[in-house]
Image (tube, rainbow, N blue to C red; front, side, top):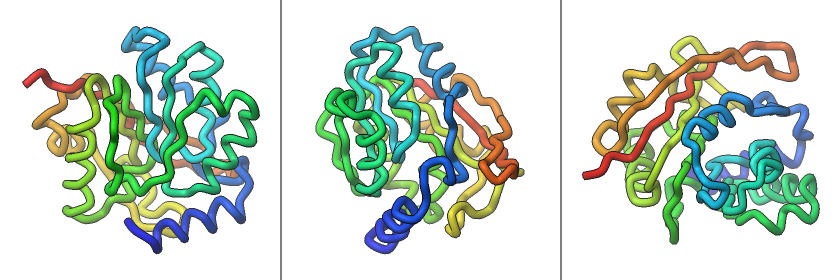
Length: 205
């Protein structure tokens, strides 16, 4: 990750409307189901990593959650989300950052990452990500990546495909795997992307 990746994603969000992005979900139901399963208070701190202009924050606001953060490498993506939300955007903390250089100043009850982690394709990048989540997550973590039968590229970039066993091995030191599912995501271009969603809980060590 770095300046080239930032330029890449800024260009993506400058040239594509939200509804044209392959990853768009009008209702991110699987993510919501995982978050609901934790039975957290509405004051729980939730961060959407790589959230861009995802609709997850809209639904969480509508459900009454009050401590929400959205992080993305692209300032343009976050601006798109702010414009969509209007006055509601003031209720959200917005962070422009590359995830592997993110230095959190607080901890989170829920760390949600749909389709950011699989863009980390080197051992160094993955190790940096692990250090960030071990330091900043105090409750639950949701990681969604392309599965082993999912795409090998996204938005012109290489990605890493995962099985639930592989994800469990990566995070097992500090996180207990709770549940994993796969689902087909249908893009606006009527193609299918198979995703793996895994839920973890921070170990008390």
